[in-house]
Image 1 (cartoon, rainbow, N blue to C red):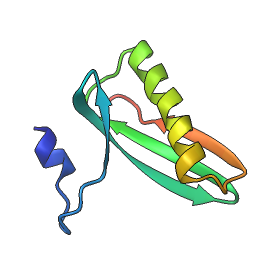
Image 2 (image 1 turned 60 degrees about the horizontal axis):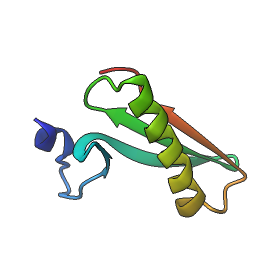
Image 3 (image 1 turned 180 degrees about the vertical axis):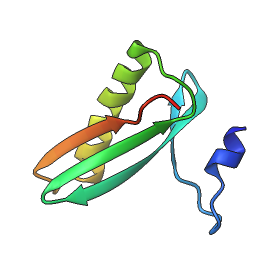
Image 4 (image 1 turned 90 degrees about the horizontal axis):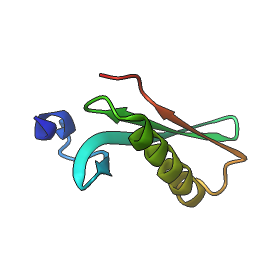
Length: 80
């Protein structure tokens, strides 16, 4: 079921999130007015501990991938 959620018409795969070694979400980075926002779309409801870990790792990713941004935001989409 995960494979179908990751397939894109152009054949490129989106960024993926591993939770306990399994692909459980995909992510994208948007930029607007000096803020870089990482949006994580889970394939299932994440536990509070999993969501916190994903947010923490997301902030680290933004610090690397969007170092030029003035501010960072991590959004975990609502439960699917």
